[in-house]
Image 1: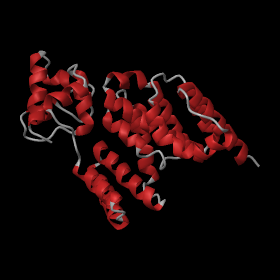
Image 2: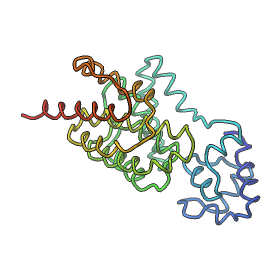
Image 3: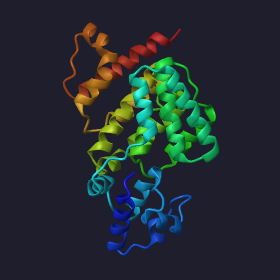
Image 4: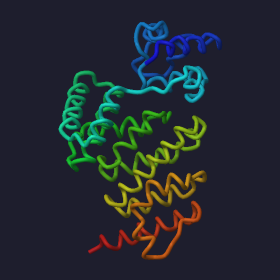
Amino acid sequence: MNNSIGKTFKKLRVSQNITLKAAVHNIEQLSPSRLSHWENDESNIPLNKLDQLLENIHVLPNEFAHLVGQRYVNHLSLQVQDAFIANNIEELHMLALNQLKKYNHIQDNTELFLCALTCNFYYQKTKIDIFPMSLKEKITKVLTSTSLWNYYHITTFGNVTHLLPDELLYKIAVKLINSFPHIKDCGMENHIFAFIALLNANVALIFKNPNLAKNYCIKSVNLKSINLITIQAYIFPLLKTYLITNKLKIQNSLSWHKILFTFVNQSIKKTRP
């Protein structure tokens, strides 16, 4: 990350007369002295802590991103993206295994999130799940216990929907739905990524457990600000045949939920003996 991030954070904190101790309040494994090092560019601010720090100094993530004039990019995620686009399965496998080894040594949530990312992209190409169950349970614990859904929580969940068992997936999805009002207040980018994560969860549940998918639809129907372009881009390929067969059109968020609800109901009937 750019060195200006630590200095910008310090300037915002000091301008509000917030102490180092207050800035790290309720943030695990983060002391005032460590924060001081980050502010003085002696080390980087961990991405998984940044949104919590910003909340403690009353600054929204999108506001901070605008002030520092950049978007945070992780080098490993770029490597994974390049390998995925190039269809380099061997490279994806190597990146995933290396990241799993790294997490075993560091045991940090940021590294855990990157494990999920690398294993997910490998799974999408091969349908081989190398993400250990123990780490799936840790991901679930982190995401269901968080009081602040930041960019990294949201995108991590969006990247593990096909790797998690149906019950764990449903549990996290409901947590995200319940946190949606706060997410909307954190900026349009997080808002959009949250919708994408919810749509990914919906698709995964349809194939994993149609009954849970039905319950999920009931809980998500009250989300008011559904972006129809986003919905059609992610869910329409799945429902295309169904829509054509039944001569239905997506006209608004309510009709979309009715269509999806009916689709899930038919999936349930098909899975019954």
